[in-house]
Length: 463
Image (cartoon, rainbow, N blue to C red; front, top):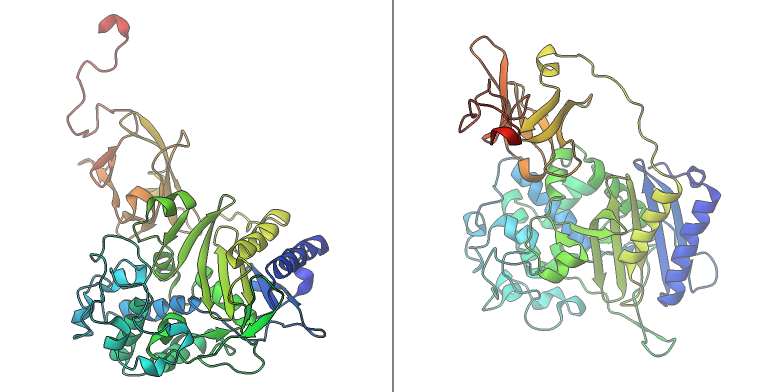
């Protein structure tokens, strides 16, 4: 990845440094390192440290905790894209005998399986994975505490099961599959399951005194797919680019869009707070901006990756303390600083490669009953249907190659849009999931369900 400190204006770079400096000081973090990504590459790195001399840089490893889950989710989506499983499959179909097989793969990815949040027994993050050698040790005698599919309940054991699923279908360890299928293609050479020098040490900071205590570093064993990884801001910057744009060697842009789509039913407090969980990714709303990524923590370490797809800006923040700075807030602020100080410059407008008359015939104004909509076709090959009032259902559509279009988002996601023609070939109306769109409000010449009153429109004098 090309890194240029000159990509950002001096005032922007100072604002970024000020933000992490305040966070490191007020959060009493032994060290903090951060990176910002824009337009597909890292444009800023910064760090603060309590140790005299050279601070950490983009090559120093920190534990990233639950950001590991996003990597595991990518492996599962790869299996789906290859046809080896369906997200609606119960786990039992592919990994029998776990005692949690009724949960679907999608439910495990979205934390709606009903499984407990943690593994029974000693605190798994501070004890050796050798204490939990089997899946039964991770799950315990009663793994479910909620009905499957009914509510969002974060589950670390759920991602242990997904890691075991990857191992079963690939015939190799989760670590080997991850390295071969994700880390090597994306050139994440400083991401590993065990620390590699240079790496930070993990610390607990006393809550009422400026004193520190070293935290143990344990191999999590079976729980590794939920939180084992060590990484750097340099590698996670590359990973953020992948999460925004996709990479066909690993996962397509379409599959990444699916990963970024909220799937988990939230509690009222989560809805009010703008939080939702997707397939291995968190979605948060901050300052009017949708931010996708994941947070992570293990004793001695905090981590956050946060990306605005719309702004094409992402931030990574890592610290080596058990608690203290709120890294999501810091990462969100880094994204905001760049997005607001130096707004994204859009690509030049370009016309279509070819103007298909059959497509142009459909462009323009349409009416669903009395609601006015505009249908537009853009150079990227998509169609968009938007209410002219600015309020109401809207969606983009992807061409299917047969004259029909499939909705990509919102109410019409997955729904089919097609032009219905009269015997002479003229367009009668648009059909969108049984909704009829006509060129005029309740066009009397079109096949409007229920028909149109033969006396037509009228004023008060004809009522």
